[in-house]
Image (tube, rainbow, N blue to C red; front, side):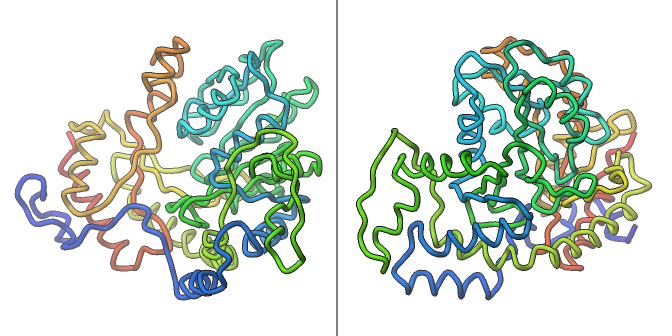
Length: 402
């Protein structure tokens, strides 16, 4: 701990660790992306077109999956995937409570019931034992989340789901680089949905991708995501010549644009380089915070790979006299941006009031909801930034100890 970390807290009138605010999750945009977007603007083709097709193909090759379909968001991908997997009104879909609400919202959007289950306290991933207990004759699908980039136990979930004919939809919003027992995220379930939101490891500003090994599902999602227009209808304006399209059903407006894909292609080409940088920062944080009143992320199992999307500190409130939110405000005053991943789904008013979920029903998710705190963690973080984060966390948590 440096002398800076021993100074008075900024929230109590002292000098902040940083002069400028360090934004949580700021994207790492480089010259390659800027030039690619400019070329796309100059081409005159800024809607869905050849850049999207290139992004889909490069993503498909990176994962080694049969099909990849670009969409406007991971939420859109989850929604379309659930429909494609046959989920209908009245069905039940098992979802972890410890996730962003979009995972459960997508289930509501198709008219099904989100059946929330608890997570494992150490991994923050869906608990397969809780999943098995929650299955009923109405269970149609399970949606595991690779939380923070840590692989969910798809091996255990497959053993539960496959014999019962239950579909598996991976929420891989955090997991572009995630691997479970040698298999990449996006290649294990019936479908998977990825996010390219501005804070993710690969970004397009907004955007997502659905991957699947099923050609029929991929074709349906491609059509459904663009109004229900016949496949590759965007080519009607290409140099291949105009072709009439047909609408076979009322689809959705869930397409990605070429401007977004132009950001994504260079990002994807640096994905392994960026993963290596975040892995080094991960180890730096683990070492720096080992003596603080926090629970640190445990290592992954042999054969697994963490995508290193979020670095979450779980505060040991028994050793602190402050709440998580007080710690968060103190870090913000030090000009260190923070995030909360997440307030569990069952604690939100809609899910509490609509489905009757109570706080005590999912003790691990509730425990984590009160204690989780994410700190700046991306390839945008310089060595100086990392030192500021480390000193800021030390300064605040040392002051907050009992």
